[in-house]
Image (cartoon, rainbow, N blue to C red; front, top):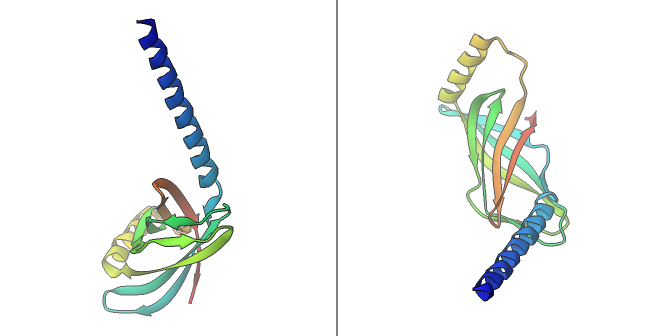
Length: 152
């Protein structure tokens, strides 16, 4: 009986140590991958809305390449959603480098109408334009919430 308990304790210790080391390594990598200040470029106005390119700089300050497997988020004015943005393909950020992700989106007039009505009702005119969402790299999720600048 003592042998089974001893084996079980050793196994539990190995599992706990492995979990601790993997968590520590994951956090070290996660703290060195960041999202810079996004930019928005307006292309044209159509009958459906405003076509934009959303430029999202991602910085990889680790010594290994980092794949961005998924990215999704919302363009917000205050808490009002103006558009959804999704990365449709996997992108690899080279080690100790940064890459601008160019994501196309449309600010849909129907969403804009609801957002404008909410802003008028709340009378909270001066809010920041933000991009809030999450990116995933090798199963590690990186939440973000960034303000950004607009250019024509």
